[in-house]
Image (cartoon, rainbow over all chains, first blue to last red):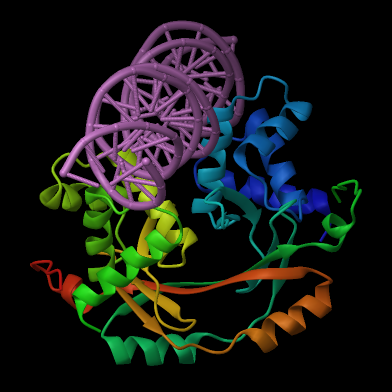
Length: 151
Length: 151
DNA sequence: TCTTGTATTGAAAATGATTTTCAATTACAA
DNA sequence: TTGTAATTGAAAATCATTTTCAATACAAGA
């Protein structure tokens, strides 16, 4: 899909949810919708100010939270305990994440339903969430001297 | 294995690693080795002071870190972003975690090697870690009015 | 057993991430 | 165009975690 169309779709979603479309939100939406990387709040803040200099970090947090509620981005957990935000992939996908730059490769992994179903009945737990995530270093970051590129 | 033996084993491990066996450490080791639940630092702090009243939160953090280095406990991530610590299960196990009380049911899930191998060669990533975790509510916490029991 | 050096401790302060508060601003419906 | 409620950014508050540091206590050696 055309990047501009995606951005407009996200902004429409915001508006449908009763939110106003503002310059800070537009800047954040453009960033998040356009990045194949999972970005941390500070990263969004820094990149976002290129587009909208007055952008505040608080607004970044608030907007990311709203986008997550709408299912447009998801919050991903990293091994070091930090969080990043990622545009949601189509369909349910599992994630392979570069711990260096945050680049994400969604992959269609095993269907976990049979497994969760079995474990649920074995243990009596009500299972409501699962994580299948792989972590590693992407080809670009594996190069000794590499230049990160945003695409 | 007898609980006391496990505790002694952990203390031996600490000593072998050049650490001194102290009262605060003993209290924390007894807690962690004996709990089937994943405990947060504050929880360890509160429970630990029952045994060793002078225990400080800083010591809790430091001891948990050391136990993790020795592979005796592992740090688990929860959906809400908090962390808990859990005695390490025998063999490589995946975790089913109660988000209410932290009770953990390790389960022998699929062997992920074939999957990670395929994804690695498909993407060019060097994969070095994976998470397969299920979250839910344990039988005890599903009861409307339940009393948490530590066993 | 006593001594001594060093690892360990807990309190306080520092840090880093995230949230709350609040007065000023701004989108947008009427 | 205007009124109003949503939104903003700064500052302060909060929460988890780490660092600093002087006092203490383990355990190796005399």
